[in-house]
Image (cartoon, rainbow, N blue to C red; front, side, top):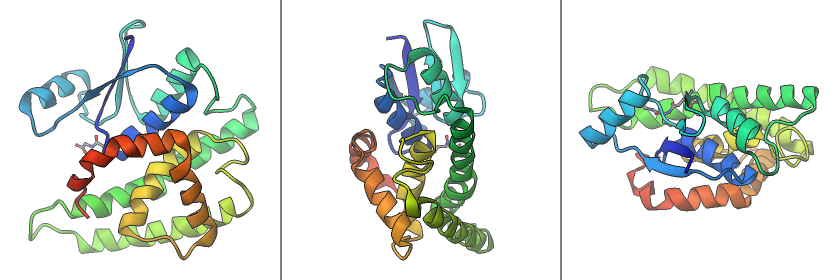
Length: 214
Ligand SMILES: N[C@@H](CCC(=O)N[C@@H](CS)C(=O)NCC(=O)O)C(=O)O
């Protein structure tokens, strides 16, 4: 197998990459990273000095790539069999990248802040930072609710990179800062959850969800 995705099924940024791989029919093997196992963690650090997952290793083309959005674009360029995640139309591609950035910066980041605070030892919590993260998430929900009020997906009728980013981000965010009061956004999340590519990604995470700290 040429493509090895170094990942963990519970990681939101890994889910963001696995979903479009299924959408685009990108054949890959998953190599599970276990930060609790020193050998697995050391092997991953050797490949990815910043130690952030996912990382894509392409043995056929001799490439090792971090960064979820970059990995998705690379896979589309070299391996997509169907359904492009970044459209060819430049205006649509720009909107796709914009909402992908929005998701990472204003949904993933505050969601991770809230989740990881639950992992901190007693006495090391950051209530001020968590409060700011909640404010940011609530603001993002308002923007996203308006965004999806008149469209099926984040940029229109085609499922894209932006939806791949928003799916795990909102799925986890909803657990720590419920979004049901935002009716259009709630309906959008429900559409994401039954999208076959994301449903499969969630199914693969299921055995690990007991480790989710919230
Ligand atoms: N900008 C990166 C973010 C990746 C990221 O934050 N990954 C998390 C897992 S969801 C991670 O590896 N965290 C390990 C750590 O913080 O040490 C991307 O888009 O891939």
